[in-house]
Image (tube, rainbow, N blue to C red):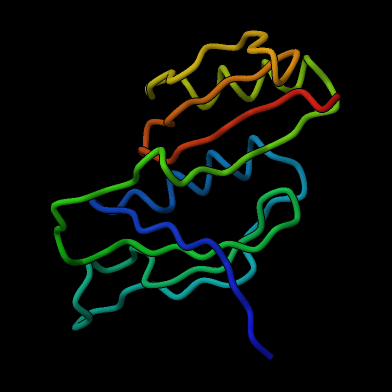
Length: 132
């Protein structure tokens, strides 16, 4: 069987903090399995070597990279989340934008009654949309 999943590479040991935020923010989200760096591994002990998790029922993977890269997340790849409720959209927008960067504030942009785009405090990009 061939599978494809989005993969998030965190730097500085922040993967667990990001996952904690996402699990607390999105419904139907949880850890599927996780492998952590142990003594003698290339990453700091206890950080995430590889994890499979769900966000809103979709599987993702992530890791804490033990290698320092000259790149990080980019908004050119984002997770698009649709909401049935304006209240839920606004709640998630405020949670993810706290300590992050608002790329497009919540507004009517013509293609959607209410849409916002943020990079969260970990650099992960989210497009948040009110379903029509």
